[in-house]
Amino acid sequence: MNRNLLFGGSFLSFSGFSQDIAMTQIEFLTQFPLAQAAPPGGGLGQFLPIILLFVGMWFLIIAPQRKRQKAHEKMLSELKTGDEIVTSGGIYGTITNVKDDRLVVRIADNTKIELGKSFVANKLGADVVK
Image (tube, rainbow, N blue to C red):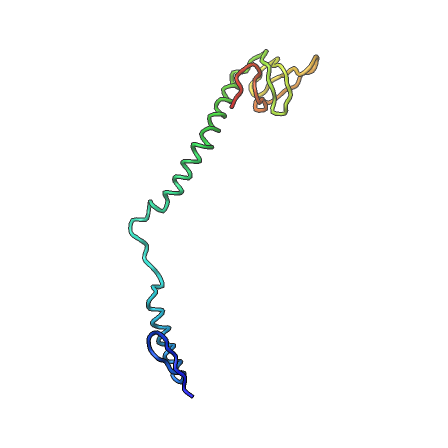
């Protein structure tokens, strides 16, 4: 019994099925290119989203942080004897002596500590650094 199959608009018989399938596979593969050329002029356009992301992050994160850092450095440079401060550890005290890289801070009666300038979080009585 010879069965026929309608495939691609033509009848294929099972007796010559392997030859017809080989031809249809070749025809099928030639319809789809294996590699496509890149569209012309895509150099800057491909990097534009990354550039926009970096610019957005600069204005939302980096620039405000640098502004806060400059204000904190200015506050540290203006510290003088008698200023009340809060350390980054939460200790409140009054500056009794200012040295080049550290401060002598009175935190209680007859209790003084030396503190690195970078550990001063805020100056009391001044505008809070934001």
